[in-house]
Image: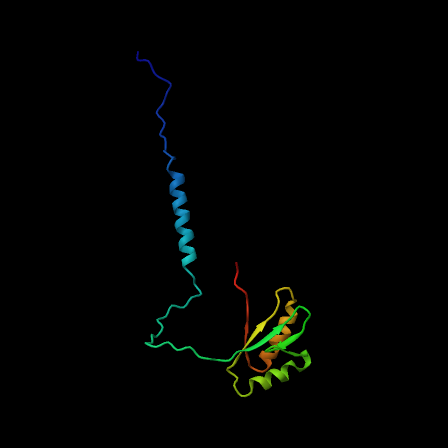
Length: 132
C-alpha cells in the first residue's frame, strides 16, 4: 500500500510585478487623459512670412478698492463712466478696453462695469496678474 502525502500542489500567481504594471498603466492613462481635450477644434492655421503687430491704443479702465473708477488715469464717477467711455472710443468700436479690478472686490462690481460693454457692444478684456 502506497503512502499518501497530505500536501497537494497549489498553483501560485507571482504578484510581485503586478504593482509595477498597475503603476505604469495608471501613469499612461493619466498622461493620455490630460492630452486628450474634447473641446479643442483642430485646424491648420495659415502662415505668413511677415508678422506685424498692430499698434492699437488700448483704453485702460481701472477700479480701486475704494470703488473709484479711472479712465486712462483720469478719475470718473460711475454714473458718468459710460458717457466718458463712449466719448473716448468714438466711432472705433473695435478698440478694446482693458479692465483692471482688484481681486477682493465683489463680483457684482465687475458685472456692473462689464454691463456697460455689453450694452454698447464694446470689447472688454479683464487684466490679470501672472501667478507666481
